[in-house]
Length: 75
Image (cartoon, rainbow, N blue to C red; front, side):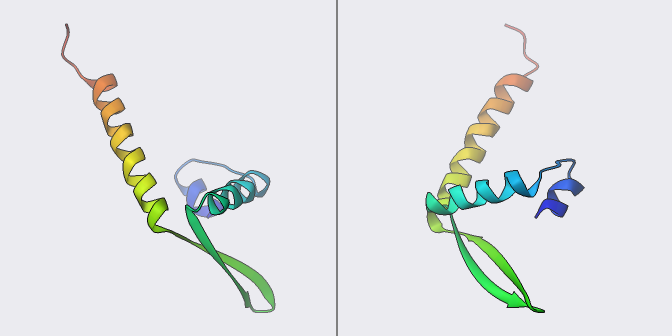
């Protein structure tokens, strides 16, 4: 996940990323699954129905904000 974020210009340390993921899981936005792959523990995350609803709501709010900020019309 950190690599994907870095590809988009966001640098985030594991010390910031994992607490954020754990908080989102505690809030019911994500669900995780622990697996052992190649002898190493790997945790994967998926969004819950609540997480998808919150994401869509947040995207609507961001679109509205972007329209207001980027509107070229002068009063």
